[in-house]
Image 1 (tube, rainbow, N blue to C red):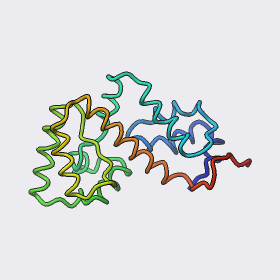
Image 2: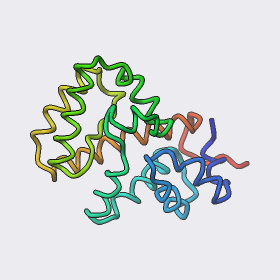
Image 3: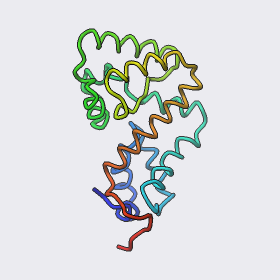
Image 4: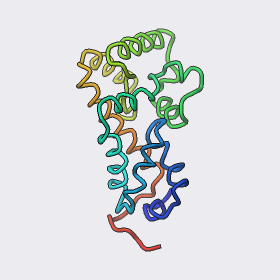
Length: 178
């Protein structure tokens, strides 16, 4: 695990390669956050990264959402998801679906993407498998504008967990000299 001080002193390429995976298939976020250094703590780093998304127009945000994999979808079945997504979906049991559950999630993925134009995104760490299905069905009934905002909220949670897995816990918000 790395300290925030270590992150602040990284060269650009190391910074991007270390923090690029925090946001799914979107190293441009780490590249954009580079200029916000130094970060006083993990929260400041996460905010600088997430602000890269929030500053974009709706069309760019939609494109950002589209680089995320379908939940237990084709990318998962073909082994083409990022390591982070593979682990996250596996911890929720989405890699061990029954044939009935797999058919149901394929149908939900198709319907959701057709309705909203981007995949269903959920922080699986906050839900059981049953809860994920219930949330999927509930959110399928929501409007696209609401779902765009909800997807971004879910990504904020996912990315914070990913960032926390990289950073060592800090006891206070001050930068320690190296």
